[in-house]
Amino acid sequence: MTNLWSVILAIMGILLHSIGILLQKKGTSGINFKELINLKNIKNMKISSDLIIWVIGLILAYNISVFPTAIASKGLAPEVISAISGLGIVFVIILSHIFLKEELYKSDILFAIIIIVCLYVICAAQQRKTITYVDKTAFYALTLSPFLLLMPVFLKKLTNKIKAVLFSSISGLTGGVAYVILNVSVNTGRGSFAGIFRSAYIYEYIIVGFISGAFLQVAYKFGDIIHIVPVQMSLTIIYPLICSYFIFHKSISIVQNLSILVIALCCWIILRRH
Picture (spheres, helix red, strand yellow):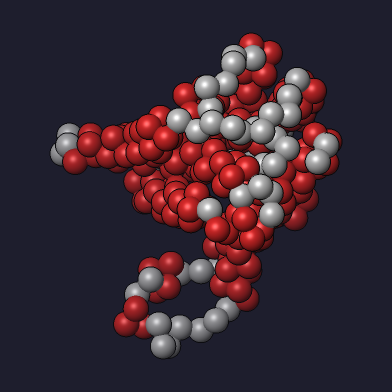
């Protein structure tokens, strides 16, 4: 599989994820989530068009989008795919402007161009290397270490804003780990779907991905999106970079690493503005 085809598939996966996010965003406007999670009233709950749109968004963002991303993982490193996920912010903002009539700032266009240029640099510098070694000690240490951020949560003096940042950080870090696990799963499964689903890593990916989404929902209970999403998205992009060094013992590429950091910064600025 060529790098170009892998990049196209990765972008397709991010686009499907972004459309799913947009549908969730549109669906939530007419959903009473307190009623939705109240099991006593579930028999009397009416299935509205907003609920259907929201569920379709969930399936599209967290299930269907996985397939092109998984195939792309055969030809691209996890940190490259996580960097490409930064393009999802651009997709969501543009689609929100077109379909939901939300405001689009001139600075959004500038930062979108910077992200695209950085992605070109990252993909141009990408070397096709099959994963031949996985440091399992580092793998499990970096998978579990985000949960250390739960320790301060139990302190009574913490404000809701700080709790929101902590939960969104856990979501971002575990989301970044999920890209790494998916990459390991695809490579150990030799790229075939039968091989992938025989690998234990794919089930770890599903569990970690679910945990990431769950912590993001918890974060929303304690803070505003403006405090949560920039932290979550930035860590999702940066953390696979750190994981790759320790888990795969990869050599450092200064150009790629700087580009990934610039993408994370651009995403953070765009989301803070909105």
